[in-house]
Length: 114
Image (cartoon, rainbow, N blue to C red; front, top):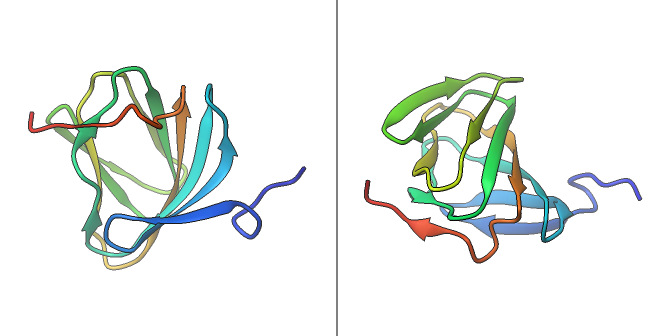
């Protein structure tokens, strides 16, 4: 079956950020996310899951293990398990990106102060 934001399971997270489950399996998760201007997720890490963030629209800022990266549209970055990270939208417009997680991050998210 075809899937898109229009027919995917939707949820709200953080400070009015949106997520759409494009694929929701235990071994693989693909989520389309949208973050409004000047929002951020909570810094965290995953014990088991590795993730790949791929920007569809706008400029995203991601901090990974103390190093900050700016990702433009059609750029992505890998985050290994056990690696503290945090996504930010420091711009004045929405950003949209894919988060691909293997396996799913459900039950595998831990706060990080490092």
